[in-house]
Image (cartoon, rainbow, N blue to C red; front, side, top):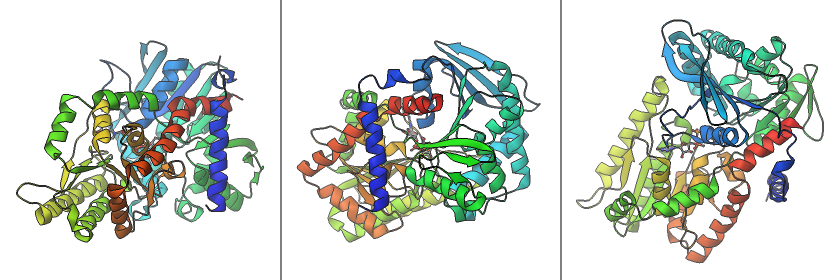
Length: 487
Ligand code: GDG
């Protein structure tokens, strides 16, 4: 273990110990304050839950349903005219407040600065980043619009929790309008190394706007340190040993809060679903073969192409696997109006088509590539059926699929997780086979190791990881964050 790794392990161990202490959650000083969550998309439960919402939405909903409060953000609708006030919808203890976006705002803020400037940059894809100033203007305009629409809904002692890269400047706009509430920000994606961030033309202004928050949360220690390194090197900010920063005349706290999943719920869903009609159909279709599973939004950060290439290498280097393994790659389309996503879609179709053309037999197809999504419970059953979970992002803030795969396993006969070292989850899931996704042969070797791993070792690796996910689940995640924000 390196020095950095051991510091990270100690930080996580302390957090888990804190979480495990009896009554820890109820001591949160934020307990009696109203929670106001702001995220780009709000997933209001009209007509019931779809079962297909992503990790961020599940985490936020878990907090709001337990604590009550307001969830504010974009409705997901675009309109021709300028957007009006928020639409309000109450459901149980949660008030949903959503605004529509004009087509221009959607283009410049969402498709533009968020998904063509910040997303590629923060995932180290400078080759794909477009720093068009029109996008930046749209980003500031929508953050200002959100702030103006939110202010009338706020009370003085609300706790505001703002999520992700779409909304970094939100607090600065709110502060400019006189809001003095405690405001926290959580970054779901990586914080990049200094030299990468410097490529952003407005990096200083963006970091300055982050400093309007009271607490900035990161997924891993690495990202938090990269942020502190920028502050200290580029701005000469003073960093206290506990991670508190003095910058732009403000005192800001930073912390690491690795997002998690509803472990118990998912484990139960996977066990219940193991005998369902669909899972039996899946099992019947693969017969006695071993299943390797990948589940990802169709995004260039997820390392989908290298995964197909590594799988091809497995079939070439270890030909005994031909006819004996099947790979199931589920990749629902994502951000379809952004051109780079059309490109990855075409590349994946070509790569999977070529692989199947080269290796298929009359009674065996090596890869099943599904360009659509499934319900959460069904996914849990898929994970449980798979002997190997293959998660190979080139960069990923956390990666919840890795955690979901582990939580869904049969404890008596668990599968093996093969996980990229560049996923935030790799800092926690030490029972996985950790791989470098750029090393195709290494990934193929790891899959081979996973397929051949004895039951005892699979169990031992699974139990350690499952225990962590039980202790530090999605409830611990939000309770931990809000307790620090309210402190
Ligand atoms: C961002 C960060 C961070 C996927 N396909 C289906 C489906 N999914 C669900 C998965 C998982 C979620 O979507 C994806 O979460 P990830 O964490 O893997 O990735 P991002 O969407 O990129 O999320 C990431 C996360 O925020 C949370 O902080 O971990 O690093 O990039 O829950 O299961 N769900 C259903 N059907 C599908 O076909 N129901």
